[in-house]
Amino acid sequence: MIDNLPVDGTISVDVFCNHVTSRHHDSPLHVHSHHIELFLLISGNVSFYTEKQAFKMQPKSLIIIPDGIWHCAVTHDGSPYERAYVNIDLDLINILMTDKTNLYKCFEESRAQEVSTIILDEQQCASFTAMCETLSTVIEQNKYASDIYERIILLQMLLLANEVAPMQEHQKNNIPKLLERLTRFISENMNQDLSLSMLGQRFFLNPNYINQYFKKYMHVSIHTYVIKKRIELSKQLLREGASVTDTCERCGFGNYSSFIRTFGRYVGMSPGKYRKMYYHEMEIS
Image 1: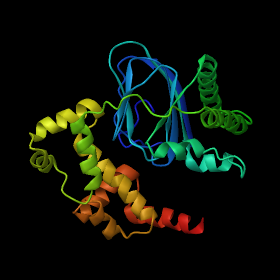
Image 2 (image 1 turned 180 degrees about the horizontal axis):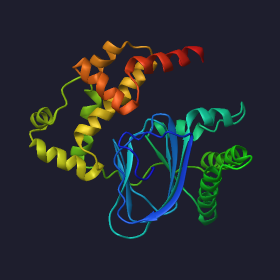
Image 3 (image 1 turned 30 degrees about the vertical axis):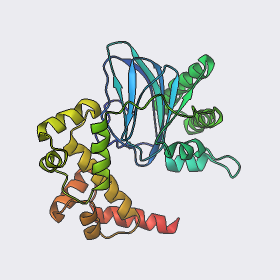
Image 4 (image 1 turned 45 degrees about the horizontal axis):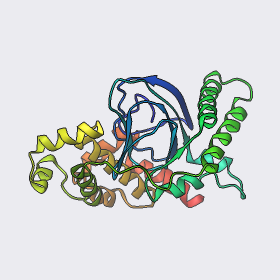
């Protein structure tokens, strides 16, 4: 999870890598629509959240996070929170793969349970951390053959993630029931009214309480979460060839002008331009 990441989880580069230590750093619930993530917890009292589960992370846990999976990490105290992570664009992974070696395999297998966890030994943990540091330096310096060295390190990271067997299941799922019900209801009703007042009526709770409750765990307001969910769904529909008008209705924006304005603010271009660019590319590929 990129530190100081925009709420929508946008990553503007093919590869982002970091090794950092801090205290009380809680990332907001976010998603990477075209990047996978390898996230290693080295130390810290941390829980990992998705839309359906929450579990306490063990030191030396490498989390395999497929593209399109909402997630965040939450610290519980002021102990040193050390982590190393890398985000890789899907197109780059496809370039690195061969007919015999599917480097995306571990992410495909993780998707059924949202994310999966690999427990590294001391040597593997040190190796992954060192690769993150070296990769960050290579990217920053951008010297001769840096692209070659970058791909060599990425290959090593992806091979490690695919060769070490993941845990069969996470520790006990500790996600609060109300939180799980909220995220499930929102995901299943994207084309409906998802205002705080409506959610308050649906769950028989004060709307302000619902918002504060959600933000306590996910570190993002329900309003922002719903908007980003709708933007992600609209991007998917446009890539599949849906019209801008149909996409607006299916994603629950209601007001066409509001959809155009909101999509442009989050994505950086109009829905029509996005559709023309990415639907055309999918047809060619």
